[in-house]
Length: 279
Image (tube, rainbow, N blue to C red; front, side, top):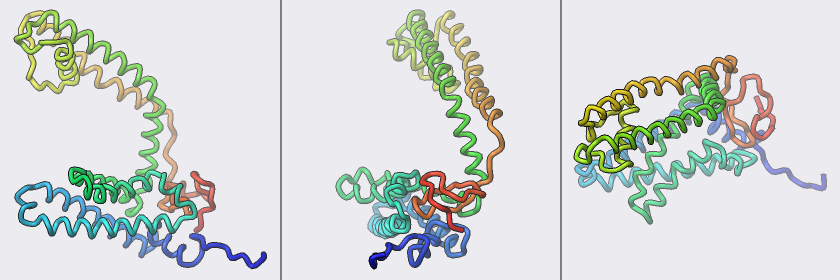
């Protein structure tokens, strides 16, 4: 009405085509785009890793940096296109993948001011999580959601358990500080608590070791308790997993409005923004 022209949406025209290529993995072009993206991410990670080797950096440093900047510019263009292809770019920018996509390009630009930030570019490895949608591994995402739900339901029990462990570690560390001489490494309560943590987690660095009979007896008790403590969180989470039903099948389709993925294969509307999911 009134001659007002509606702005293009992902459902029509060029934006729809770009949305299909960039966000969808069920079409040949979409899958080719995502596979190319994954290969580019792997190449970027390799470049950052090679640049950290001094002998390689001295000889090929300029080439590695030039290639890294070329990939960064490509990732920047891709990020802008992702924002352009959705109705609600700010919502996508605040989503998990939106934040990861942004963090993948920021360190390179920050390195212009702070060169020490360059190694942070390895955070691009998080973008490899897109392999789940590219190769139709959506059911693994559903299983991950089950595990997350079980851990969320267990958080209070685990917090109580960890609080008990911290108290026990502090008490045992203090006791070792009392019975062991400083020459054995128990020079302070923090040092003794550090020993108790290392021993109870069965890591056993060996930098601090008891020398008295009482100390060795306490150490033996800590080691035995450590084996039992490891199994407790596993049991708590396992109980919560048993309460959760089977995971619902997931699709690789992305919302045309906000870009959120991981919808149920029968979903007609986005679980994040409520927009209709086009076929």
